[in-house]
Image 1 (cartoon, helix red, strand yellow):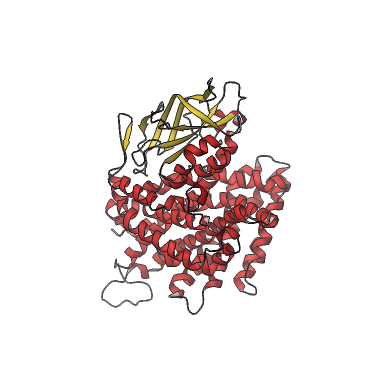
Image 2: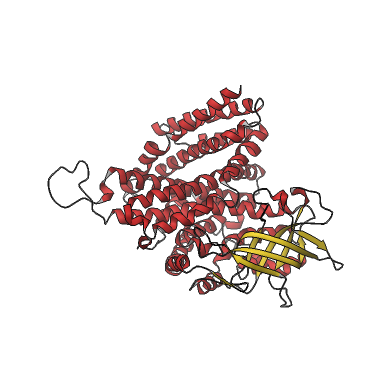
Length: 572
């Protein structure tokens, strides 16, 4: 069983040669000293830590898993020591402000770190996965008193955090949440209720856990506008323990190394974060950050699956590959068989385009935070609003389905535990569900963002992409044609939705997939523009996946747009 190893040279190629990130970042005063050498050094050290410390724990995390007993959770062997080394080395604080104990580095480096972590050990990575969102939430919405007590501990990762939204009767529909918060005479609150599916709700990795909890005040109106956000620590500053209990952990299909907890709040004393009734506004800071990280989980897991399948295909011999002749002799490597090459090159095309889009989105986040130009910030906001739901949906979908294709490369060996590929498929499945199901991502994109302004924002994004395509190439002409088709389809949906209000909800997934394919097309044209005569092993490494993208992936665009047009015609 081969263990995932980060291939930072590929990641650096996308960062520097494809996106020209160092130059973009150095133009921002906050990152004037962040050059290519520094970024490469950070990536190299991150890859070394992930490969040597985190990846070897993946098998035990799955087979032994987190253990619950009498309300306490013990993490799998090695998890605690690895986490202590992780935060003490400063990895959770890469993108946090220096004034909060962080390193003040670009968000894109944090994104690349979490891609590697997810690929190496998804279960372990669930623990620090919410730290950045919790940090931003506390930083922008908490009182000065709460910041003094919790901000630096969360920023540095010394204390871990949770996001407590879901209840047994309230999953995606948070407006049904019934957890109550009662005001106390001293200005604090007492929270009571049960939250489920809480990742890392209880564990032994850190001395304290900071729970961010959605609850309803006694006089709050029904629905999502009646929710407020509260901070409930496991331990208070005086060392006393709060009335927060882990009643059990779920037995799951995958992610056995991550405790998914049922948390009971029994009049737990806490403080409000932000204004009453504005809980979702504060929580969305966490949720938006989490959605980018979930997209990175998909990219990382698919890369890990591809690594295993590619290594196996270079060792296993079966039959003679077509074109090799019919003479007797040693069987050929399965990686030489066209059916296997199609699988491997196609998944590689997905991983590499995912990196371009994810790293570009992380760069846009840095522009939102640090650019002093209003137009630049507005463009970055538009990119993140439209592209993030697309990435969360399509790359978690591909992690599972593409991971299953990678399992197919192993034949029967993929279905047994020895090779480790079946764990990736099991672990990947939940990413299509949490942090907003993929169906909700599609509805968010089409209904809340595209139709809300009649398609103006989407057309502006398409203008940006079209202007960035290499000039003259045959593939660029085809990409421009797809962009024009997407514009026309968007206009058709806008018109048809006026006659059939349910139409956008029926075609939302098809629309999101069409947008994703246009984005992937752009991403690969950017990749190819960065490949030159000096690029090592360019034909096998970069050009073969590019060919697979156009042969096996992009034709889906025609199918998706055809479905949408047929639905629009039926609605007329």
